[in-house]
Image 1 (cartoon, rainbow, N blue to C red):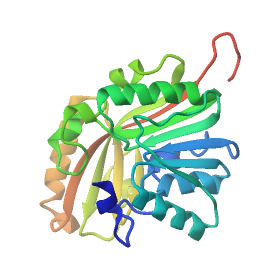
Image 2: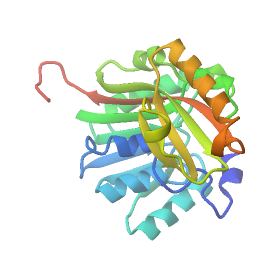
Image 3: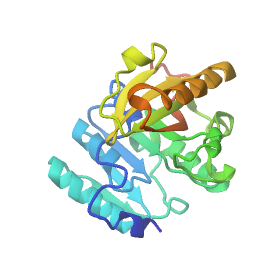
Length: 255
């Protein structure tokens, strides 16, 4: 399936890295080793290589990995690509400074096994950065898996790990808009968490902590679809987890 999707000239998820990686750039080491799980067309692995890391991009699709190598060449960096099913992919223990999993959705049993291998592969002090669709995404038509087994919640994710400590975990809603040229979140939304552009569509991140805030956001979307420059816009809501964790060794001071 993924080979067919990636066999297009354009990069179907864009060639820019996941915003959560950019937001974690202050934590990411400028040298060392990194693995990008399910890296597809390489937008995230190439970004990490540009920072200075020695990157291995792993994906099941050779078509995606070929585009990842092309992107790396255009950006003047080198990445290693590995065609593998993550269910069978092994990682050397204590070998990685960083492992990222960006929208890499796996069934429960496989996810648990991959995350256990991820934990062992991280060096002491190594980082694991994940972004994935939340269970609430089932209510929206903005993408992502359509079965609960492939969507993530924090409790299940944390049950996969024994020695990783959360540095930051956000349950985030993203509004994306098509049909408008610009979006100034500072004017429209004084409670927005982070404004950015994902691919070609203006987006706003919202950090929501209660059902009342979700209800308010939905009412705001409804109003925007009726008024002003947004009356012709296509507005979509996406629910995601953005999580950064660090491996620690009991008895050692690493902070």
